[in-house]
Image 1: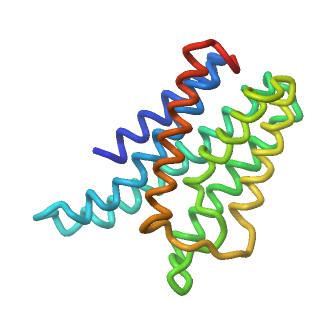
Image 2: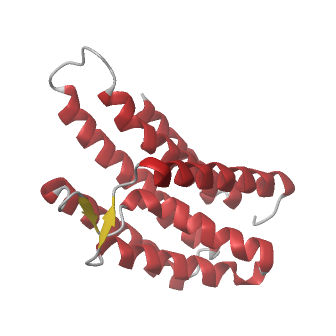
Length: 195
């Protein structure tokens, strides 16, 4: 249920991006990430789970990531860029790199307790952070920021480096960042900024 709620949040984000309600779209993408942080722990702590549910949950989580952290940012980036042709390239790269990253992880998993390349579920957060800065500091730079964010996450999703798993205080700080970012984005949405 947590994973599916995240999917709904991601789909609502895509809907708002298509309607050019960009801060709300970005906020809903980050909410999908927050829910993705909790679906695994909730599943692991659920008693009397049927034997087939862990495998089903793994597949469901991967498909949810493809929608919320692949397609979601890939729609938000060209929406910020007012659907100009040049922003379709980073949008396509986000999806291609993201699903490639998911497929690699589904086959190879962890490497020495670490993840290879930037996990796709960071994509909505990175894109949202890069968009918040221009909306706050230089509204005219939002398109360039969207293109840069799209290219950056696509490269990071397939780059040959390792990332530690999100645990302990890093997990807590990441959640604080996500909640703060969501709050700022909803304030922007209420004020009509970034739309």
